[in-house]
Length: 240
Length: 240
Image: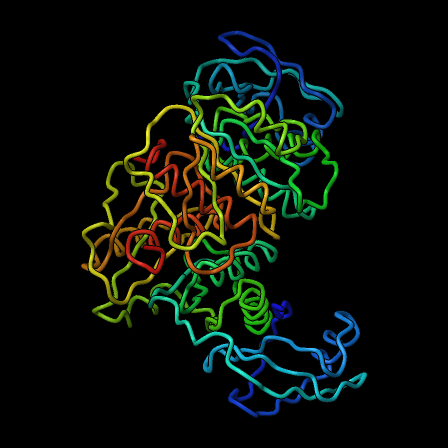
């Protein structure tokens, strides 16, 4: 029988390892999912693959699981960062969820000249990434970094990381990814007002930059994030 | 100066045409957007392109605009239907919004064996398509059809319409769209529990069917809708 409930834990997983549940995890497994001693869930921690965890103690606020066998090896996503300018709360949550499902290795909120948000709730966004990984069957959870200014982010740009950049004002200048190099990449999604003229100038001048078109309609930032990840995964990622 | 506010109306647009606002439209333009006589909005009705509409009467509950010049021709999307099994309310709304932004010509909610919803709020979903068209700069609004059963939908399948179908259980059987024919298409997104065995059998047996992979992770239905539209638009649609 397939184990349907998946749970992210931060403890090491391996044959015979015991995992203690936090209070919210115990509430979820025993209160919400109605599981009991003898039941099983799929455990992953982002490092050791997925393990079958059998429930050996179940309490109202605590519980212990024992790892019996590895059900999936660790599957790392390709080395692609999804960088985006945070927008309204719900849509920012959606971008983190979708970037995780689509296989981003790291999620970087970026403050641009036209970004209204001056802060993000990093812990809350990281929790969304965990939940998305539980849901999508992944064994890896991308790190959500703290909010960085675009200028500082580009000042420290790693020279071998290619940058896919979607500039909706840039008609006709799109390039194809088909001939682009594999290796480390980042995808940058602008804010809904677009990039400022000086940001666009700087991005276009980067030798690592690849401008990609996402069609003739204006996409919301969360739609653009999924579309851009799709274009990249299909050309250079793990969808081949 | 660019006219930023876009408004969908159901009246004919053309030089000198006058358009009467409904009460919610008057509230939106004059109460929320604080526009007044002499101001302008972009009008479209899905048939006549986009027109600059100048406000010639502004009241609390009514208003009149006059079309002065056409700012965009009608831009029809490619002939692709987005067919999906409705899920929870918010995510169904999102699918309609995203299908509109991504350029679907028609949006068809489909009841499958594993679909929980037995009805949809068609008017509400149509209103979401209108709002997405206003937002994304489109001049066309896809029709949201009533909920149809998958079996009946396939019974009346138009023989020349190709069907792109994403079967997450079908590893390794994905085909490329690169050599597929242009012309009418439909994209079918299954429910989160997948298709039933008999549905899968029937879909695979259709001569019009093309199975496309959306990568190794399980995507939520709303993510899958955007990813599938991206794959199609990039290969056969108006993103080229």
